[in-house]
Length: 251
Picture: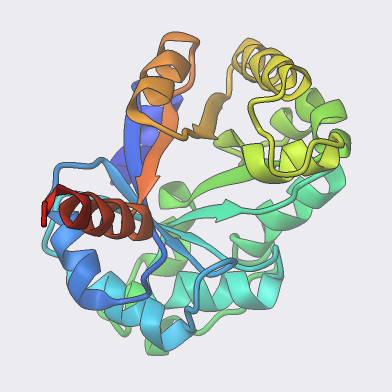
């Protein structure tokens, strides 16, 4: 059972950490740190199917849900991500109900979708050991879509109404750019848009999520109703920790 999918349906807060180092060793380290989910980024990190597979294998033994973000909502890429064993996906830049329906279809086998059938050779099915994989796997798929543009904001209710979409996740960086405030996600217009978006998502009954810039921001978003919240990145932890350590050395 996909515990993340169930938690989002119940609106129980799930705190995650972004993985951008594209490295199985650091992924395993983070998997034991107590987060509910880790996001393996194929959009803005130097990941390939092979590096994602290695990280997925590295975190398998830990009680954390591995979430993958492909660079684009391409059914071919989605098929590959699912076949290697990801069952939770975060799809960037979703702007319409039609696009959301296509993404749902990309995660379902025929006749309910268009996902290619190759269960005997996929890691996700235990290379064929799970004889009911084709029949049951759709129930375990957790699909979260990113709202990152003015068009996405406008279509929140339509996107949320699509069956098979488990949550809507606000991407503050792209959203700020799309609203004319590139690099300034704390601009009052952006903050207001995010606040309204989170309320609108929750009003639909679907899970609301967001990338938080700090622990304080994460707590604030959870209090506002967000249940799928990222609190930082592995790259940020490494850079900030290394920088703080160097500053602490007094010569």
